[in-house]
Each structure stands twice: as C-alpha cells, then as structure tokens.
Image 1: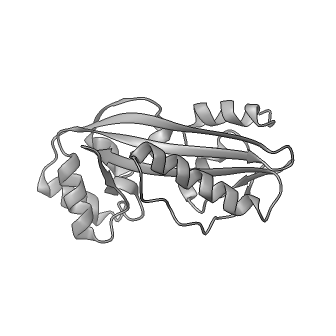
Image 2: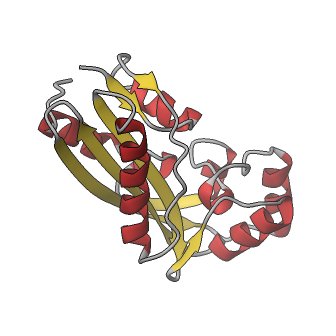
Length: 186
C-alpha cells in the first residue's frame, strides 16, 4: 500500500526519507485552518490536507501542519524580511512552543489516526546584528516563526524539551507509531 505525503515541504520530505524511501509526494491544495486553539488548528489543518489528497488517491495519506506559538500568539510564515525580524525579536531570550499536527488516513481500510507533538524551544538573547546576519541567509523564508532549527538558527537555541524533528516539521518518533497503527510496518 503506497504512503503518500500530502505536503510540498522539502523538510518534511527529507525527514520522512529518514525512515522510509517508499513514499510519493502529492501536495495538498487545502487551506490551512486559522481558527481554534493552536493545538486544534494544527490537527485540523493536517486532517484537511490528508483528506483533500485522500479523496483523489488511495493509500496511506500523511497530512501535517506546524505552528510556532509564543504567549498563545501563533507565528506563521513571515511575509517579509521585516516581519521575520519582528518574529525573531519576539523569540529572543525566551521560550516558545512548536506544534505539529499529524493526520494519517489508510483509505483502503478506512483507518484514521491523528496526533499533535509539542516541543518547547528556548532562544538565547539575540542582538539586532545577529538577526540581520540570519536574515541575510534567506533561511527564514517559508518557515513558521521565521527560523530553521537545522540551519543557522541553531546558534540561537539554548535548549529544547521534546522531539527535535518536530521543530523541523515532522515528529518522527510519533509518526512511526502512527504508521504502524494504520497498517504500515517500517
């Protein structure tokens, strides 16, 4: 039975390839959910993505969505360099949470499982000069919270509590458990 990743994210593709090379990428055109609590939003968005692809394709469909949350404020993907700088200043010297919702749907057996992972990330205090250095890399583009933990932003991270791969966009520990539950042995 084919595994289908309903995401165009190169990070999710690379992470999924760490546990299996047998999957197909079919990006979902579903809109992300922007209402409800952050935890409800990531799970609902993952579900919508999986179901959108699963209505057209058969197999085990994986939908995922990631949000960065600080003080109950959701940080999406920055629309500009200035917005990215504002986000990084808000994260400087404090903790925030990265939430990733997962939804798996085995369309042939009609089995669905969903989960959200939550990881606490603490940034050290970062200067405006360091923010400009980071922004010059362009790495902030298309990243929730305007940073990539696996890239240059690693120098800002004091600590994390939770699953590292969750911060990158796909919590592999939980995903491997859910895949078994829907009938895919790794």
